[in-house]
Length: 552
Image (cartoon, rainbow, N blue to C red; front, side, top):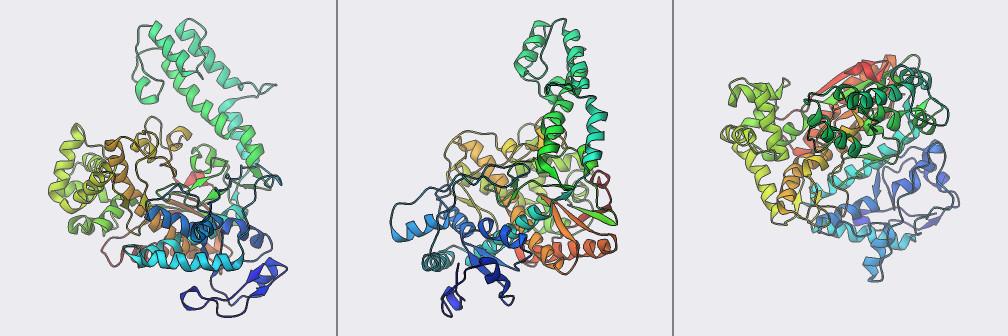
């Protein structure tokens, strides 16, 4: 490993030193406040395993991803080796395929390894990236975004190392309660088999409830036309098969997504250990490489139990996206409403919807997600009269998206140009289309990954409308995580979970009050850092519990 100190402008400020032991090289330099390296995922897990914590880093691969996106080139290879090739004007190597998730074990020794990049090349790429940052429309914001994303890679690695406290015995009890006994050979458990029989009896013939086409056909033979077996479509159907079918679907998802096999694969040493990937989607939202950590139904959360003498501090950002819309649109009325700690939707309803909170919520979410037909159009008109700058902001983003122009978040994350497949942007943005919010199906809708955007201009407009809000929210949460990580550095507390607007910290009971305060202070700081001085506040609903399921 070659190491060199950097001075102003990213230029070497001393001699290059060859270190035989990378871990010792980092450990012996506690005075270093920021490390520049090719990719955190390649370096930091080994350091953490050796007990070495890094305060800050600059991830060259993260920077390359953000800069390529800003230049309208998202989807091109983003590794440090690819950045070197572009700089040298030589053939650009493809990125290695993402390492497959290996439940309960380390990555395969035979999986592709990143191409080694010599230090001199890495320094040249770093200097070029600084120039490219300067060339963006708002360099300060873009640098902040790169720093925030780099911090996110540190948080993800530390969360992967810590794992979520998980009681396998409680998980088994829950499965037994819900699903009944397991049958030999891996077949459906008793309760699913019973429900399948009830469905078949209701139709008068054998029907496979796990096969949607078979169910749709059975309904058709009963004189009932349905297009799918989605909950919202069949729950109002008057037929005796509906009740057992819906219950079968709910339990089947739990069995497949978080059943006994999941428990064996992903829980070990008292910890649930998925692999969090920061910035896994174009909006900046996180994903996991296996384990389904972002899709845990509430009933399974009963198994997430703090260690003896410890607590889980579960914090949910309240009405995050409307508050972000207020901050980025600079709408005076919406900023004033979002500056209160009270219910934002109720405050909007008092101003524009005669106190009808439900209508106000539909209007705000319709503005963000583009659900503007029917009553949504009327609600949007009322919202526009009271909060014109907020509605104009997302309308402008939608128009830019429809016209194929690049659309950016507040800090400069860029929506990709229109290529690839047509998709429903509401679904791609993670809006539940058919299932309860705590079901795997409802939350298994991720926003567009690099290389996937809508070929349909209207659909892309809807996605761009949501992108500027959801992506800016992701920018803010990265800075929140960075601030919270720093605040927890001198505590025993550890970040163990994060998804979109929820953070979980595992801490000794006596630290819980300090952790709650740290979350509140991190929220205030990240709001100022991301959006500047505005009246907007980002309050959290925080619960200190022994069991995750008790937080909501």
